[in-house]
Image (tube, rainbow, N blue to C red; front, side, top):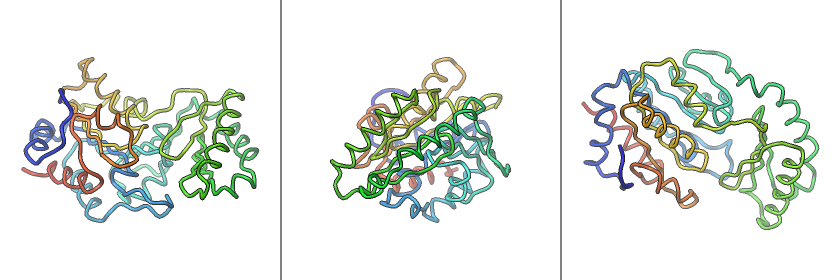
Length: 274
């Protein structure tokens, strides 16, 4: 789908996904988790996918050729959260691949040598001062995430996070910003777009939908557009999930826009209509 972004209505959603519904065996349904399937919460460990949404995904996995969740969480954590073993998971923004039925995720080989250095960096910068500011450090294997959503003094927390980012860059590491989170990464390309391109390689998928709500999802939007421009995909639908904290680009770069996780659930239902 192309053209101006539109808020989704029942008629528009049917129109947008019609090519995917007509040939589901050759369609990929790709979804972010936090803020898309699961509502954003203050404590990420407490986030959950509503059972109604999970049941829809199970039905979708039986009908569509490829279904995958694409998350900033580790792949094994993403699968435990969604709790569906018959779909694939791209974890750590595409750095890990856990295919349907696999027991162990595969890490992008370019990142293996960096995981130890990233962990050492985390050990040095995760100081009592950060913890007093209520900055939480999340270990994602080859990625470290510094969350300040729970900080009482947000200005002080952000100043501390800025210092962490500066130190990481001075040591040759990469940084990536999200919604109240800084990620320190190896200085190689890690993004959801690259992960999706790898996932779709050597498949007979010719249509794809991606649904996401945050900055990291823009890379997924852009790879689908590029694959369509190159003729590798015939039908592409980029769905933006609008939220108060979400970036404006999620709306402006999307083909259609839904309101929050409830809107996502409604759109998933449309994928199952005959």
